[in-house]
Image (tube, rainbow, N blue to C red; front, side, top):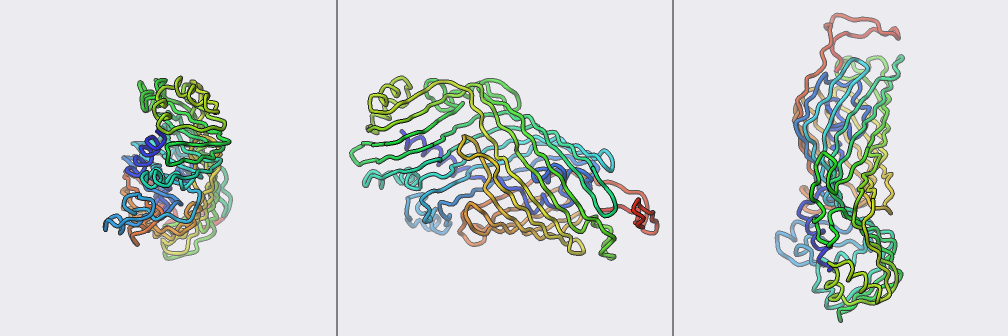
Length: 483
């Protein structure tokens, strides 16, 4: 039964594989609209657009540290270790592994509005889905994907503090940003996003400890077992998805959850005298620094099926499967074999991927910039919930009002390797990838793709090239539009 459940989850993950990224080539642009809100809500303030209407956005990919995906093996039909997709995945030497697939981000219609030179607001709607295995045992994964091999040889599992969370939820977010300080060459703005989350469904496993041996005679011997399972999409009869009745995508009903989320951040810009006379109109700063904490919050499910298994004992895999769909029978069966099994309905709080985001944007010359962004996980991975893995991304970009082109290069703390991507924006249409090594070399630990569209109406400034005024710091500046 365990093989059936995990196989369904893993195969579903592989078919929809997605790793939500931050659209580094686009979100760091000075003409990014609301796409930069995922990095820092303060980016909304002093926006280049007077108004922007978001049409749609889609972001997906995969990421892992278990092994590299090798497209050539899949297309040639050669066999590889582990039996996954006829060798599609070449396993690494890691005994423990983490996989994020899917973690999709669908952006629905929204809008932003610049009230004046100091204030701006935005409303955004999102739907997100994560399927994440964190610190799992590689032997378990191999046995699920190649059951004939494990049946012939048996295998041993030893794992602690592992986590599997599959979670889907929607958000309605309201963002506000304001310029809080402007004196001489120094400029500071702050922002906040508050959102109402509606949980659609989750399945979570928190393993504090698992030490088990599966033998070829259909027996399982486990010791020091302490595993917690919870879900709102499993009903009292144990039927998967039986608990989804009445769940509303953007409203509280049925077995769905609810919660409040927040992003907070600030941006500092150093704005000295004009440093590029040939292109003084296109840029406001020499250096920009950014700090934000994103995805603060949890989703509470008032009624979820909970199961806790503790103890030591021996079971038959066939007997376990025969009793698995009846909690009363399963509890009696496991209790008679040395385990303690506790089941029931209870409230659960499922974490979202809280992260710290630090960024520096440096203006080189004539529309050319270099950005560095560091993302660090802030979520507790020992609890049921999702998290991001750390990354450092350096992105050179060419950035104008009409066109942006960027080449993000990322070091991933998950795969401990380098990823390259590309981002392109033409007006309000954008597309790209934060991780395209699989496309370039045929091998990679992950892959990412995003696309979207918005309609920008840029701000208008009075004046002409020949007219100038003196600002509060005594500097002469053009009253023509600052881009």
